Length: 201
Length: 75
Image 1 (tube, chains in turn red, green):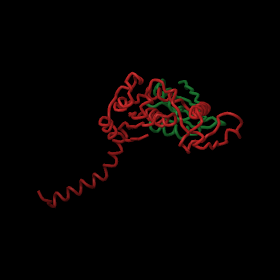
Image 2 (cartoon, each protein chain N blue to C red):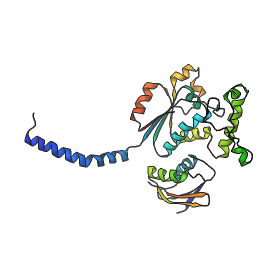
Image 3 (cartoon, one colour):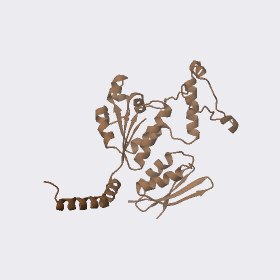
Image 4 (cartoon, one colour):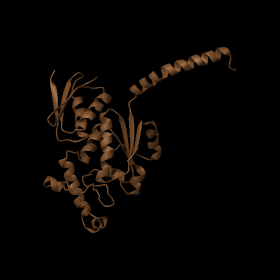
């Protein structure tokens, strides 16, 4: 069927009505849809544990559907006990090295300790971790275990990467029972496709 | 109707929001929740939280270094 004067008129009319009605319809649909977020958590240090747990718990509080896929070193954030997570100042020039005690002038000093020294002093990481934990407590920032509990309470879907479980020789019993699903990239990607926000951390 | 008061003073992002969300679950629709916070980021965060969750931010005020928010629970 070719374009006749009648169909051309109709097409023109439909096009104009669509332009008028579509933005409103799209806004309505957007308003009705529950937002979804997927996060890939790949790091297992104290500092990097924060972004996925903060974003996931907050999104859940906003009423979003949230799934977090824990893979590689990120998988250890699902272990039963994560109170021993460490932070390393080594090779991390962005990390301020400040003391969480003493008078203000002392606290404000940024201790510039060369990597070479950090690398050979035994227990340097443990010291930095202890200082960081004290800073976290004194600033009223939540502990990672507390944030993870809040994620669970908020209904965040915690997913373990099965390949990483095998790779590092873990069993499912090593992880909190709230992890309902262990899967791979093929299961995660379709979730990410349907999400409004997808983050790699 | 009584207003439930939630003290989040000394807590930092995102704890005031998360605790408020939890407290709102225990309040009937139309009920009021008053939150006290010292986190300066909470001012914008509570505005955004209320917009996203269809709860009404009735008042947002500051008393010294304490921020006070009154939220009316939506349906």
